[in-house]
Structures are given as C-alpha cells and as structure tokens.
Image (tube, rainbow, N blue to C red; front, side, top):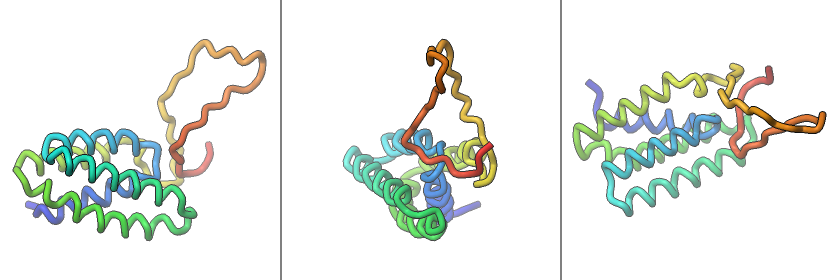
Length: 144
C-alpha cells in the first residue's frame, strides 16, 4: 500500500507531465473537481492559480529545458497536493483514480508518438482554400 506522500508525488509528476501536452485542459478540469470536493474554496482557488502559473511557465521554456522543469514543478506540486490527499480515504482513492485515468489516456503518450485529437469538423466551407485550426496548447511529438 502506498503512502499519501507517494500518492502526492505520483500525482504531481503525472500532472506536471501533462502540462505540456494537449491533455492538460482535461487534467486541469478533473483536478479542479477533486479540489472542490476535498478542499476549501480558498484552497481550490489558490491551487488552481498555482497550477496555471506552473503550466504557463513550462509553456514558455525551450523544449530542452522542460524535462528538468517538470521535475521541479512536480516537487512543488506534491507539497500542495499532500494535505488534500491526507484528508480522507475518499480523497486518496479519487486521486489514484485520476492518476489511472491519465495513464490510460492515449493523448498523454510519450513524445514522438503521433496522436489523433479525435476532433471532427463538418461542413466547413473554405472556398477552395485550406482550413487551419489553432489552439493554445502545445502538442509535443513529431508530425505525422
């Protein structure tokens, strides 16, 4: 059986790793729901602000500096998650479930793997030109 410290460290590593991928929006949403259930409104807001700051700082780093930065932010994030994870067995169980969902999500695959986002666009009239979709998230990996 893992301890709350191991759980917080595992979750923090998974969340920090997701910050640089196109699965981050979903992970942030699920984290927010977990914070709502197991934290106070003040804690929830403070943690979400911190997550957003970490994600923005990671996004601004050159690719070759991100791995080390992810480890750094994971350590800081683990300290934030630990008090919430220790509050109840339900909090721990839900955090493990969130980690498993992230591990099983194909969009969180390692860099170098091409992933289809699953988005479908229909009835787009381009007048014979190209249709380009742009988002704020960075997609890591090689081009198809």
